[in-house]
Image 1 (cartoon, rainbow, N blue to C red):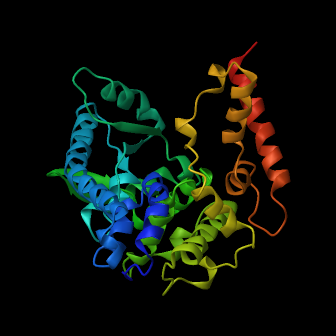
Image 2: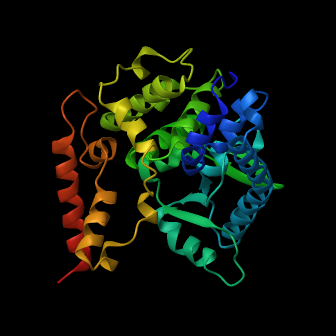
Length: 321
């Protein structure tokens, strides 16, 4: 890791963005040992690292409990993102944790939901019915490729590295790369892959999605400097000029993620409506994915307008007459 060469004042300026983006501990890793490590901002970053190191122990226990709980109800899930992504980092406390993202077959979703809601269940499970962004692949093949690991002594299943990198890329893009953490996950997965990583398998599936994943890899290189040694030409592209500034602008906006935004049905005053619409305006990446567009050089405004129309129609349909 290259040491921090900026000033304590610069670190103080960006600390709120680092905390919001989930990368405070990663920033501390660069800061420690530098002159700026003695500043107030560095203390906040160090505290985030310490807190995440403690939470990592608790989260691993939650992962183990989650698998044990679902197995007791006859469900065998696969874990993605979160704890699976954190394992790719060189230190335990470098990545924050949220829910335990478990993916189950659609025909097992009812049993899995019943398990998660059963009396005494205290696991922070985020249940995914089906394979979400990987639904262009065979569920049987994905399950056959799943790798085994241990969480607090409990056997768990994780997506194979090729499936997981594809999942990380598509999830991050679908949410407009709102958090720097998601691009860091992609960079960690690229740099931490083993020599046996199967790029042909990674690139397999819906070709539109494949082109999106390749764009995510290029962004990890362009913004974070992720090393692309050994990455084949088929997984490398030239990015359009608008996309890097769009990502950096999003990271500087401290906009809440989709799930944390106030439901539109609870917005009543015109002033609040304007604010709500502004926070929901899709960024260029979000809009491109929403309308199944391509990351080309053309302006993104038509994509953003089309995505707004699509969301509006879905909102009206969901509310009913």
